[in-house]
Every structure is written in structure tokens, then in C-alpha cells.
Length: 428
Image (cartoon, rainbow, N blue to C red):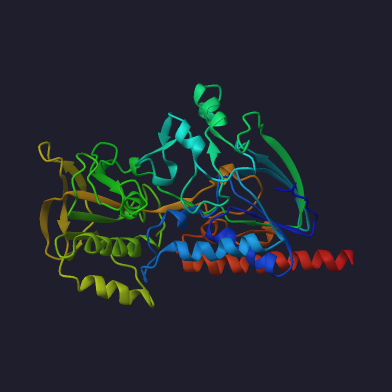
């Protein structure tokens, strides 16, 4: 990839998820010079980890492939992966941004043949699958990864595995001498699209995520349901590998809670409704889904999807905030304890598997942000003139679903384009 060259008429987009890609493409297709930086080895973000979208239940890959084609075809857009922003200085129309580019240890000669991975023995937890499976020390992040180039995990440097990977490559693509780089760019506007991270379920002590193997999170369940995921699309109990056909879903796990995330994460209700359809897809009529909820927040067109799920005789809705979870020591079944507030009776319900619909929080916390901008109490960037020409997109701005995140990205691109147009007009 050619060295990134930027001027005060360049837009920097930080984050290569659905929001960052959308904002970068909108600006580049309007003729603006755009640099898109992503801290991971490939773009796609959280969307690349989904099995299906709601409410249409289509696969995210189709949308990602369209964006990747647009990215590859646009000469105004330059992509830098394994790159983070460490500092931002300056003012609207003239920012100096410091980037840290981490080495991939694989150059552009890579054909993604996989010989390096086959030669390496060391394995590590697979981040793409939330640690549910393993990956090699030389790896392709996932099957739709772009750039389509392998990565050498730095933990194998200096070991025989690194030399094995280098020796296995017929294309001289392994460069174990790559070093981190510090890069300074001048840009006129910045779109911050670093997205969200799942709330840490270990903090929700009454639900026992850290103690009971058959209590998992919604993002882990999503990867499990994917045929390309760690279980090949089978819904398996982590404790014994048996199929889980009686599954409980707990809403607002860490959201709308003054002890955790005070805000509603907006996607959780719909994500759970979607995930109950995975059980019907896998098992036909041979399953039970139980949704423990405070209220279901499904509006507009997605309310129709909610109604369809409610009509499924294999899915029941229990209006209750689950108080705690224990475990049956013999079966390893999680047991949910609480009160059904519609029937006003206490319950202790065993299930094969429990899925916590965990909330979303910004990937970059306010105290780690490299520039001075305004945040709300949940850590999302607040639109404000004091932010200058730094514009939030997607889940850096609020908890949003994919559709609204793309709308937010388009808005941020338009704001950035206005800044660049003013710069061009002043210098013209």
C-alpha cells in the first residue's frame, strides 16, 4: 500500500466498522480524499461477527461485500489497518494527527494461501469468536477479512513457529523484521467511528457468567449460530458439548441498571427475538425458548417481527427481572430465580443454556480519548460546537442498530465534507 499522504483537505475516518466504512465511502464518492484507519487487521467491525441481521434475517456478508467492492474501486479512499490514533492537535480545517501503526509481519505479497498457518503449531483464543475457539499464531481473522492477508501473532516472534511460518511461504510474504511506525498526518476533519464493545458480563455477579459455563452472552450465541463459527452452527453447551434445546434469554443484562449501564442499548430486545429464530432454524419444533424481559422495545417496522416471534408456540415471554442464577451440580443446568410480575409467583426455572443480552458501551472510553470533545454520562460523544471538526458516527455517538448507525455515518460525512469545502474555498 502506498504511503498515506494527507493535507488539510483530507478527511480522517477512525474505525473500520459499518459506520466508519459508510462514512468513508460517502465522503470519498463525493470526491474528497479520505484515509480510513482501523486498529484491527481487517475492516468490518461488529457486523462481521453477526450471523444474521434483524428483522429480515439476511446475512451481513452481502452488505459487507458491497462496501468492500466500493472500497476497492475508490481511488480517493486509502485504508490503514492495525493503526490507532494516539494524539490529535490543532483546530478545524488543520489537525495534526499522530498514528501508531502496528506490524502485521506479512507484506502485500501474501496470497492468503494459508501455508503459514498450516506450518504453525501455537494456538491462541480466537478474538473473532469471542474466545469460543482457537486460531493459529498465523491467521486470517475471518473468511471475509479485508485486506485478505494473513497476520502473524507477535507472541510467536522469536520462536521456532515464526521461522516455520516464514519458511512455509513461497511468496516471500513473511517479514519478521517489521517494526511499529509512528505517522503524523494533517487533516481537515475527523470522523470518529470506533463503535461499541459488549458490556463485561463478569461484572453482573448474580448471573454467574464467571462461574457457570452454560451461561453465555448474546454475542457468543451469535457466533455459535453461524455455520462458519466455532461450533459449525450448532448450539452447544460449553460444559459438555451437548445440544441446547431449552434456552433462556435474559434481557437488559447490564443495561438500564444504575449498577452497570444506565442507558438502554436499543439492540438487545431485537437481537434476542432474532436469536430465538435460530433455534427454530436448527431444531424445527423441537426446542423451547424463554425470554425474561422488563419490556420489549420494538418500534416501527420491527414491531411486526416482534409479533411474529410472539406467535411462535415454542417461545414464551416471562415478564420478570431475573434476580439470580444458580447451577444444578449434577446436570450443570443454570437455574433462574425471580418473580413473574404478571402472575406474581416466584420461580426457579432450569434451562439447558442461558443467554445474557448484554448491552453496548463505547469502544473508546472518555478518559482514553486522544482529543478534547464532549461526552455524556454514558461515554458517548455529544454533538457540540466545542468538538470542532471532530464528528461522531454510529455507536460512538449513541447505542444504535445497524440501520441507524449507517444514517449517523452519512450525517457525519456530510458535516466533514462541509468543513473541507470551507477549507478549499478559503485556500482557493
